[in-house]
Image (cartoon, rainbow, N blue to C red; front, side, top):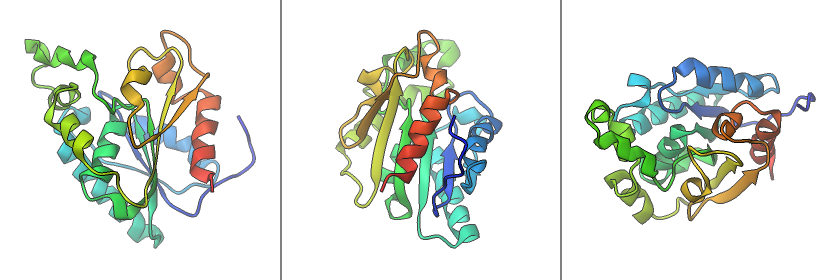
Length: 209
């Protein structure tokens, strides 16, 4: 991984994925802290199994906290996996556009995923956000119908070997698609958050003029 310090003047807010504690987002953020970024991690409830609209409100609270703490006008926003869908909902439907300069989704199920039909099976029915990632869900329909947010650069990053969120899931209209070669089956999804090549790709997008 590149070692020279590189950072943006904007604070960076990271939104965690599904079924992982907030410490995972904090650990991912360490890569950016070491390069001079001011990093904040959004709060979550029930390991992000709760309602995506509620999760977007928690992102809004953290964004405004970051702006107040740093006296900045805008933040950059990264969504990890399901956090990508939460972040996209925040900037398109949750009033976040005025506060975000650029948003980067990493392996986000932005079009919804057929894997989410597991939510129809009794053991998974209580997992609200999982059901909301079904392609026919109200959340996905609302996102599809919402206008592109003005003033926000949106990137959707995916990688090879990702069977959780293949390109058919993360490549969505209105977002600039970025596909990397730093993944491999069956661990492609997780390499998005751990492989130095993918992390440097994200940093390049954060610093792109």
